[in-house]
Image 1 (cartoon, rainbow, N blue to C red):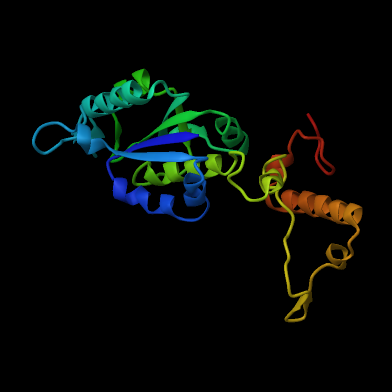
Image 2 (cartoon, rainbow, N blue to C red):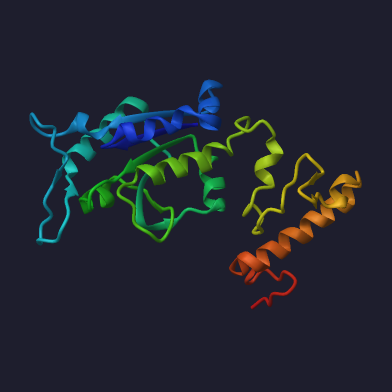
Length: 235
């Protein structure tokens, strides 16, 4: 799977891509991430990429010319993308089903906005999908782009050492994950639940499911609405 990330601040995203699971995925050739500096397509001797907005509101807006030139160059060089994604607070919220869906695509082009916004003509013409990582505003789209890459890349077959690990993550089936324990069995007078040390796989599975439901009901009851889960009414 390939990600192309366009940003005005390539240094902000390069380091996280060189560590942990994302680095191993790239080393294995399972995931490819290419970072492109938008200023390479900037205007004039100062490689200008932004300008004051029409209408007099505050902030600066990314100009359309550099973004059109960049995207069209990448499309000509690498072929069409499955999605051209703009990271923006007013996009559809990234969730686990969306990450699952995007992990089945082959090529994603991510546009990380910066400053106040991007020229609307970019969004109307080039962008095929707009995605938000939450109801809050960040200084730019670079961190959301990294979140998206991490959430999607870990689902690519072979990226995780244990293929079943991703399937048991929170949100995969609408529930949060159960508590986890490791050695020692007793730490500061707190014991690992006996069922987890029993070797009874059916009992362990039942315990985990009960814990997942209880944790979801307590922490994220909104996830259970309309599911028909115990303690919740279906419409």
